[in-house]
Image 1 (tube, rainbow, N blue to C red):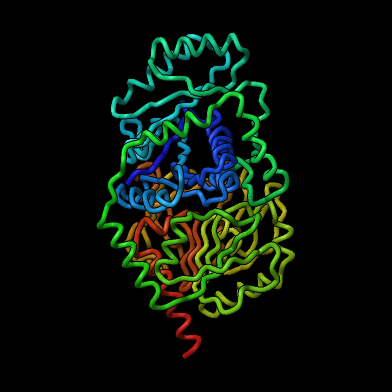
Image 2: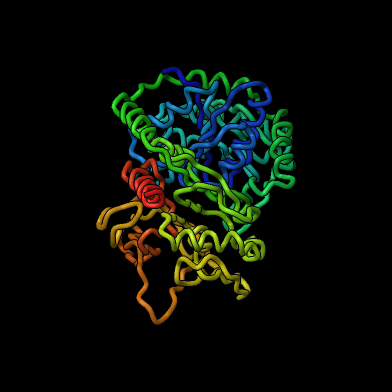
Length: 470
């Protein structure tokens, strides 16, 4: 299958990957290309900028949570519908799940998908030294197709000339674009990274303006030509057939699952949502911030991650919806909540300053905001008991990234959901809550990572639906 594609990667985090990649996507879209965006790794916020830039839902390419064959298939399935696929890397080009291998890194994904790589280099306060950096990245892995370099924070025409001359002389890698250091390409951020575009405001206009801000320094036509030079990809027929079979099976029984979606809750993997749909779920969006009632006729609830701590007053005052969620959970409706969703299901959330806000109360405990990270990184979660996603003893791959901690109510036995394996299995802690039809955890899971997850959750919703009607 011929799929034009490029990856835009960086030498390190903070080099400008998201801003420049978003700008490139927006510029390609303005020129009439149907761009399918991707993000390497478990990110939710950067993809929201890609969504705005292209009008298409960004997909995550995560080699920790997905097998190589599944990742390959999900990529080819979605990219085949577009004119060009643009992938944003994660961290530095070679940064993955360990210090001695490339698994999970941008380089790993680029080689798996036979994708030309464009390397962003921050050249502020350097000239000829930039060639040494590019040379190192070029030679570190000979199997990688390093097709070009974009220079960030160029100070002057003379600076550009010196850096370009050095790189193209010593590295034989073309400099295909540059960004001046005085270009206003900053995007707003806070404690978990960039501000998600779902919060609206001026972000939509900001993303649209990015395309104009790079047009003098980056030749979009050149990038498209590099993408079109990518080798054809083979389609993995066995995985494709399994996906088709899952979709056909899912059509046998439809259930409605309410999915929280607004400024406070927006962290979902698109391929994960489609895995639920392939199992027979109709996903119906609702807003814990703005809606006073749950959608009619739903058979389950999925409350993903986000920033509930930023909207505590608005969430707490919406008591009508809170009561409906509480009543539905107590009546046996399957409710799956992850990270921000866990916080929302607690009895209360305590903010950074100690203020306490009442929440749903299906999880017997409080979520308390901390000034430092409480959990970050890839994890493996072993189910302590049977729950609506996984059987006892089964393991789920995922990740966590949160500034809050769960404090169970004292004086009663807390029903932990998982044994969480952190730090490459050297650190094991009990985590999350599993009480019958309720599963809430800081774990961010990916429904496409294991067919059982979506099948089991949708199955629980089907069972609840049947009990309601019979």
